Length: 398
Image (tube, rainbow, N blue to C red; front, top):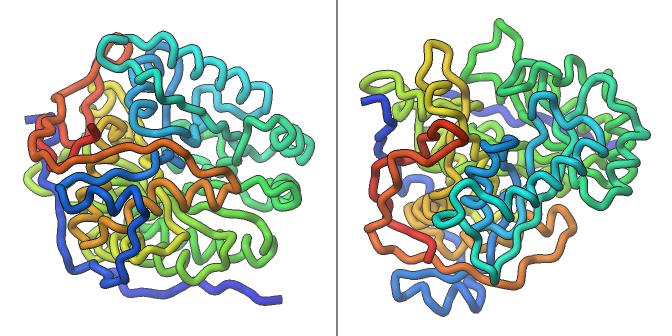
């Protein structure tokens, strides 16, 4: 049986206002192949693409969810919704109940005058289950049969927000993973180890070598999405892996390196997990998505936290990018000389991997250079600070 080997590579005020890093060093000079919709408007500093989907999103719950859900629904048609609530979404019954709460929140946002979704658009939440050591094959079959659950999420215990109930040993969920391979339910992985002796900046590479490669050799037919990849190691691994292995990439990991987090002071609103990496890794990830490979697709990992929970002695991980994410992706692809590849990354590769139809309607972005991001947004009874708060970004969604 053909086995997979890990790819080795060398590694080399309180509101966050950090410059975007947009180097052309990562550019792949590929043949330009715009779709009809994308080609029609590119020459006029605007770009019309098939409406995209977000394949990694945190919506939270209750009034917090009602505050943010329409920021995503305004720009995206569908989203894979993360299950790391408290308590986590571990059963199909819980996933269906959460889905209904999302639909209710869409109809009754906190600030309908400013965040309502245009009536011509619809938004569909795609639900996920949170894997635990006790997830059973029967639960996997129920999830698949529901028609509403589209993947299962593997959080290594302690890896990120609300991951304490996560998997302590992949061997313990092997029966569930085998059932997922049988029914075609993708596994979404937060690809970091949590071992105390592993350096924070090496957790992704070690996860690939010690966890993911053995799993894929044991279950070669399992569909796997490495979420929010951040390193050259991950980009090269996904490119070299079979077609059943793909990856999502966030706007921050395409545009920012770890200087945005650490230079000139600690910037809590630039803290996310996986943590921002050195510039060589950012360039490698940008080059991978700019290459036009079908194995990479849009996943914002937009993760709102109340301002007070970010600006704290032990602040929460996560960047709230939903309102400006599509504009940032456009900036990243433009910097890489690959605007013609944005549509496939944002609108085609994800549904193709999941076996879902592509969207029919379109969205238009324009390079106006006047899209000023608010300093904050209402978030329940507090506020959330968005990515690029207070800054003017080049692109905006019309």
